[in-house]
Length: 320
Image (cartoon, rainbow, N blue to C red; front, side, top):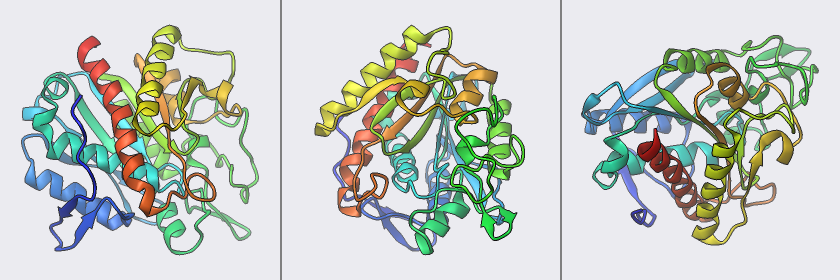
């Protein structure tokens, strides 16, 4: 596997701004980067409108397909479900930076696999966390009585609201009023279902428990039928992550290594669409809370997370 480029890296955007991967981007800057990739690399990247958030912000994705060949195994990468986990959308953007801007380094992967990357599912919460409350986790739906937001990773429609969430609209783990009651999760549902025919791997990037997790989130004892394959690949990814900077990553069932919780994106995908491979990658930690990684520590984690992703992508390219 090639060595990833050493940061800082400058990315010139259409709007005239200059972004680099040493600072966190705004939701608007993420959208500008998506547009720039689609404009500069039209034979491999195209912008996809996934949906619209509660406050009217676009939820967007990049489809990566060498020579626009549609019928390849598909990997969907989703990030930014939870507002305060800024390193997750930046990791998704850095993955795009690698596989699109340096596509020639990944011929084996791109000859055999297509990608659909959604860097920021929760733009409203992300911006609220950036501007108002750094600890904010949820979306920004108006729940009444002065309460706002849904925990989007408790709002997907597989065994919704059965374990690990809250029906209190003021709680950080509020599950919503129904499965997919959040426009953000409904948009992701539609995207996943419309691409289900070719989907072989779904990856949710979150932070920052330093784990590689496979379904199911709702149970410590319920596993997909191919749990041995999931376990082996999760172990390989964890070893790759550990080898980068020495951070310790663990791997295993999501409901075993974390408190069981229903309504997660990976449970929805594994429980309904049922592709071969479904994972959550919990990134490296930093800062006071783990997820508040200082900008000075971003470079290592972005590179580290991308190596973990590439281990999964190579597995798909060689085996699916």
